[in-house]
Amino acid sequence: MIIEPAASETTEARAPERSVLEIPPDPASIRTARLFAAAVARHFACAEGEVEDVRLAVSEAVTSAVRAQSDLRDPTPIRVAAERADSRLLFEITSTGPPPVAPEAGQTPPGGLYEGSLGVALVDSLFDDSAIARTSDGGTLVAFSLAIIPELMNEND
Amino acid sequence: MVDFSVRDRTEGPWTVIDVEGEVDMFTAPKLRERLVQTVDQGNYRIIVNLQGVSFMDSTGLGTLVGGLKRVKEHDGTLALICSQRPVLRVLTITGLTNVFPIFESLEDALAKS
Image (cartoon, rainbow over all chains, first blue to last red; front, top):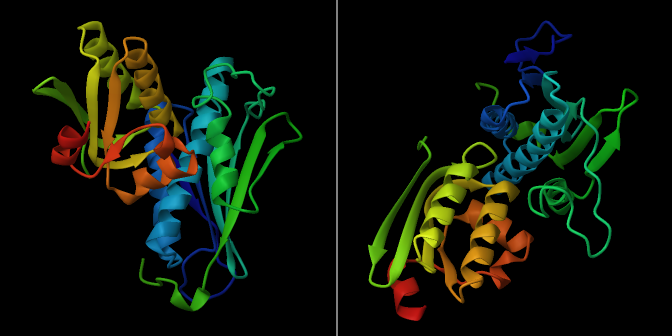
């Protein structure tokens, strides 16, 4: 597991604006991703309800990535990145497996409805601006963001 | 932080499965295994106690739905005990509050099921 804080461009001692976690595509690592995401959200003073939504969204995105890469036996780490952009906190989960396929109407996707595409669809229910895209190398990017109030950030975390 | 555990006990005609910890892709198989065992043993009236669950995602939901389908094949019932916000939220978003009987306590579940 690798955590990379982005280097600050100022000389002031301040929390990094972008943090990245890399985890192996293993079910046991999904909890680590949730802990990381929750810690970042709390650092940016998100309300506890929002922290729970972030945990759920990250869990769903990482689970989908683990499932896709397991099918391909692909050991490439999954990246969970969190970055402050003005008054929003952006989360991005990137992986090398393909995006989940939306089921045809009336059909159950492989692995079942709840263990297939519903997981990532949940992210859409939680965050209005969520996006799921295929990356240029055939992988998957899941992104979502939430509003933050910079003045409330926990600088001592 | 509570480690994941699944235990079962009997309350009259009901099998109560007590779950603690976080239910996700890693831990859900243990819950699934217990549900399958319970039904295979001929117990079709099941209450899953989620009061000790601090997190559940769609993998956990899928496990519960799978358990519900199994008991339904035998005209059984699968009810949930849950008042934890994170778990209620995911049940609500997915509409599963309309599928499972959900109670706030075991006493409530036993009295009304």
